[in-house]
Image (tube, rainbow, N blue to C red; front, side, top):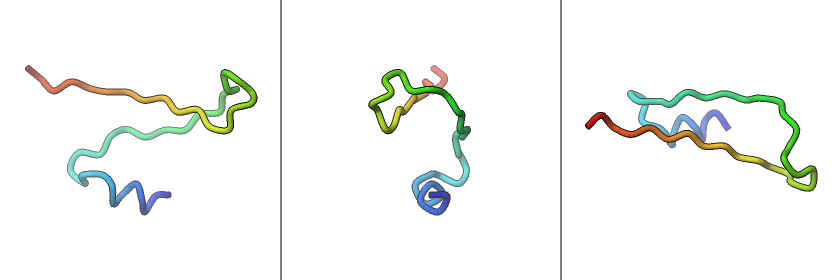
Length: 42
């Protein structure tokens, strides 16, 4: 996964990356994804 991540990103502007352990909202789900977006300075 790290190799895919590194190829996908701009090496000069990599975003923060983290993992957490948390119960899923719905236990039937296999994956839960959270996204964070940033706006460029105006």
